[in-house]
Length: 234
Figure 1: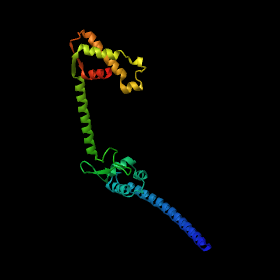
Figure 2: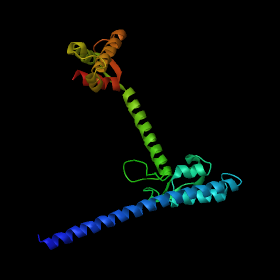
Figure 3: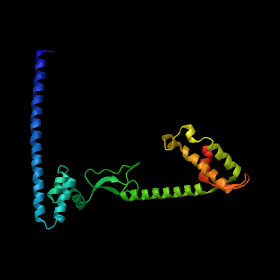
Figure 4: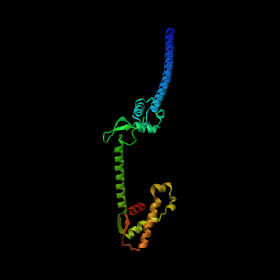
């Protein structure tokens, strides 16, 4: 590198540093001015609040609505305090603002309720509160129908000869979970329902004993219990 090129590069570095320093100073001055003018805004809001008849007067609410939604550099909490309100009360008074996001179901535009608002987290595209409530209602109703169906099916009677029920229960009861070193309430018991299956078999066997039925007699067992017994036996 020649001496002339080196001096040119160093001169360029020096000029860049001077420009950067000037920009830093300008930024600091601008930030100071922003802070000062922000406080002037709060002071004017306090003055307006003192002049109006009520905290919810249209003039004051109109100013608060504009400053909150259109001037993000005016912080929300001190703005509310300048108007003699809490932040939540001010948000309720000024109302929401359009978000530009449309409901995926009905096409209604979603409303921002605060500056930090974002569409509710959910799988799929965002929906409005009414559609979300309807969706939740439909899901709840479907869940209730499925639960009712499962209960009806579980309580339906399954007919089989007593000898078949006895064979299945004795097969299960021959291998108590304790002999398999499985504690009641343990992780494997919770995951596989081992004790539940064993106790179900014992309850069915006890009912057969109390009923004093012969091997050929048809005995009805609820479908849920029967399914658990057969699964445990296998």
